[in-house]
Amino acid sequence: MQYLTRSMYEFYKLDRLNHDFMGYRIHNINDLSYHHTKIPKRNGGKRTWENGSILVRQTSHDYIHIIEHKDIEIYDLITLQLIDENLKGKLDIENLRKIRDYLEYFEKEHCSDRNSKGKCLIKEKFIRDRIKI
Image 1 (cartoon, one colour):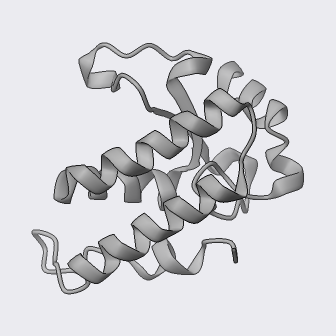
Image 2 (image 1 turned 180 degrees about the vertical axis):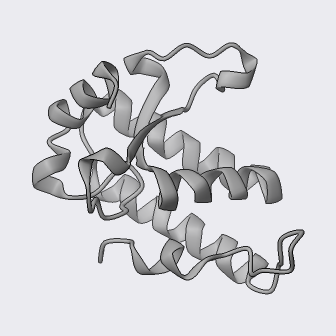
């Protein structure tokens, strides 16, 4: 795990919360990854504290990028909540509720969507691994 990711993990007390910035359960600290929020990596975004959120690699991080490609408006709304958590310096229940609402809206709109291989776009683990709010 990179230094910045570990520092943010410790600062936000993710070990005690046992969930990431989007409300996904953390099963293993090595599953965490840094997600560029304000300025994407592809646009030259730096790996800085202010530009990032900590997400679980194979659930919330993969899912947010699927959402980004399918529904940019929902992606932007979720991103605003991630940025707000970062600005507050804590993971706030209100932010997590809004993120959950956006995820549920996305799931209703895209429940029958398939990827290029014909598999369901919304994987079961994207729903199963969220914390109860």
